[in-house]
Length: 172
Image (cartoon, rainbow, N blue to C red; front, side, top):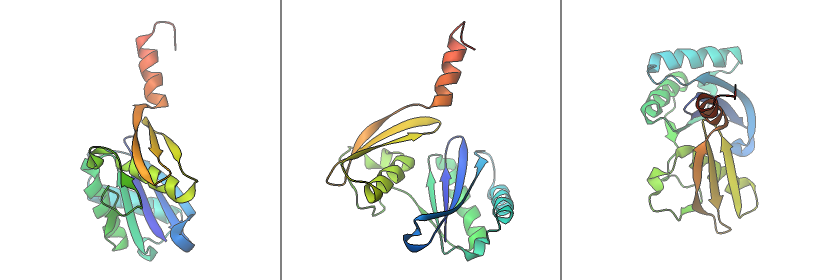
């Protein structure tokens, strides 16, 4: 099983990818993103969550980390290494996902968007578009030639709701 960690602005989602090709989701759990937490604090919280799910971290054959919170990328990678003994593979535009980039600065594309595009290209007919609903809502377009063409980012549902309710007199 591969331990996968998705560090978002609001939550950190943790999952176990199992079976052939690591395509089966064995478990999922989540914790709140807290940018000031240390390696020790995240390792302790992850250990608790994994224990509650009867997952033995040292049985993981690998770790992958996808992060849109740069300050926490190394922190969570180190926490995972402490628990599993494995170095984390960090999602970036330099990974061989089978995609090429038709954007000016691939390194500036959010890691979450890279993961969305790579997964869509691996599992769905191309061309396609992905939509990811998080703190921000992201849209990505992948061509029939496995090219990441770009996309756009808008405020997420909760972010939009907070903004409209704060800026209007009659909406709750």
